[in-house]
Image (cartoon, rainbow, N blue to C red):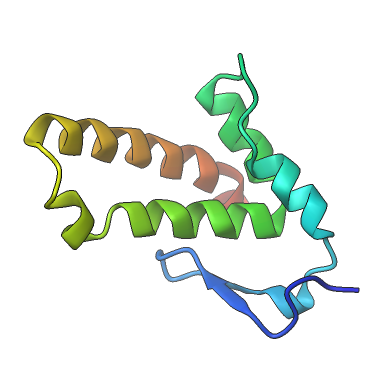
Length: 100
């Protein structure tokens, strides 16, 4: 049974996923989205993109974190650090998505 029936998630990059069409159990997505101690960022993002719901959630989360009204509240150094971090995350998350 598909999880989250009737909901769509947008990555903020012109992609969306209709969760009603996904048969991944919510527990799988939760496990993929949970950071584990000692796992480097690249490995975490590569694992996240294995699940279609986890990928959509992570991309939407990054998009939300970078909304102008949010980043405007940060000091310039923190804003620059997070923009760089999330740009790298998006590149890693998009590697196989764009190749498919």
